[in-house]
Image (cartoon, helix red, strand yellow):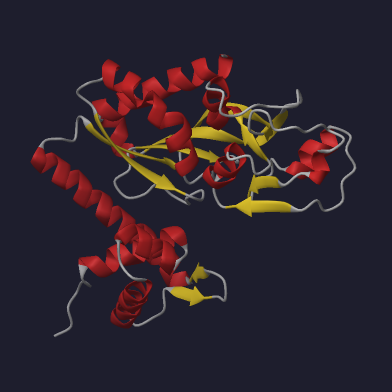
Amino acid sequence: MRKSLPPLGWLRTFEAAARHLSFTGAARDLNMTQSAVSQQIKSLEGFLGQPLFLRRPRALELTEAGITYLPVVREAFRTLVRGTQAVTGDQQNSVQVQSNISFAVNWLAPRLPAFRAAHPDVHLNIYTELWEPREMAEGAAVEVRFSLRPSDTVRAELLRTDHYYPVCAPGYEVTLDTLQQHPLFDCSNLLSNWEIWTEEQGLNWENPPITYSTTYLVSLSATMAGAGLCLAHDAIVRDLIEQGRLVAPFAHRAVMPEAYYLLLSPQAEETPGALAFADWIRREMDADGMA
């Protein structure tokens, strides 16, 4: 007799692969090999009798069946998380927070002692993403998302807009006239980029060579090592500038099309710990933006 449900592990692997649109990303999240992820997806597709992904040369794409099945799987995991928290009794003060990795490392982590001092009873679990997720990860109560205006499928509150500009290591010699001759770094797939910044400065560049990375952490690390200049914005570099690890050699700040948004899951609205963290991050982001 055919089982009515596939193994839970297959479903978790499917959710991770769909979230990243990558078997490699899912493997990293789940501490599995890429081949094991691929095999579990094939097993799940065999169980369901239809494909969940289109295997493109450079990326995955959800099929219609995958698009339909994904929210069902995510809601099932959310139900399990809520039920487990209800049984263990820690749903009030244990909060899962999601953000991109650069924000978590450069803004959130240095401020965690202040949050801990203000809310010693709230325990945070922090999950990071490289790219803007389509939806909150299962179990996440609070998300800080850096993106263009999120889709109407999620409830998003604008936390703060920001400005971006070039930064370099202290003592690195550069002027606007020589800028194009230096190694330049940037984070890929952002509208706040070198092309726009240089246009606003009246510099007429044609296809300058730029080294791109999928996260600001790479470009910032290279820049702090003296490898060149990178673009960054206040939220992730202000502390580094105040610490003397980076400098902003030019006065011009460009307004970012992207911004920071706060997202709360439905269960967070009834979770004191999640509400406390959301209120704290609103105040911190507001104060930091006015600094």
